[in-house]
Image (tube, rainbow, N blue to C red; front, side, top):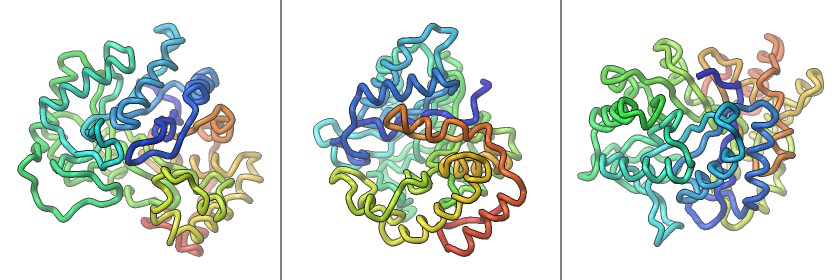
Length: 336
């Protein structure tokens, strides 16, 4: 698949009332935003079965239904986080149990209105336990855990059956990607990656060495690197917005906003937005294929649309590295 360097991310459009919601959204605006991205040249949309407990996939299905087969964007979705419809506000369970996966893929195909998923990704490693964003757990094994070799073989089986075109691992490190590669080629990975969260550098290096595609998520660090975020906005996030209590928006907020501001002179030099500079930084990293960027309105799409064609210079990258070090924002290496 030949993909554009940026793709539309549909986490934020999934609406309110579930554990990792961004607050209430307007479905018509969400569909319009996706169609605006596609009409502007973006050729893939990333979603997940868990986002909005299926609502995000329903919106993606509605958005792509307007296009002919020749013009329809690629659709990437994920499996393995299962929420309880009767308790949507509770954290989901990480599970790649074969019966659960089979149920999930049929549900995704139905909601998306497609016969085959272009890229099917294991959302998080299976621990068989409740998922808490940003926490990896204590290393204990749950009796409900499905071993990696079993669930990755199942993903390969789904591809062989024609239900998916390619298979990928999201949020899996080299310690899991290496044994998975021995079972079936890891065709892509999806790690979090931004100028703030640089902790996936080793994941990207592994992919670069193994001929594996890399689509990074949260290149704008959930809005912090847009150039429009502020301390006041962080203090007034909606009650149901998961970011209200996230460390990047509380204890780390000041440093993160200083880093975002340091990108502004570079944006001015290129006639670009701060958001486009932040995204282009991730795309400049060796091994990164594309970046997933969210939006809830067509206007927000316009704020990052040119990021894929923005080429940062060596002095630009050095300036950003210096800003990373000076602000102390985030974690991970400032340069490849």
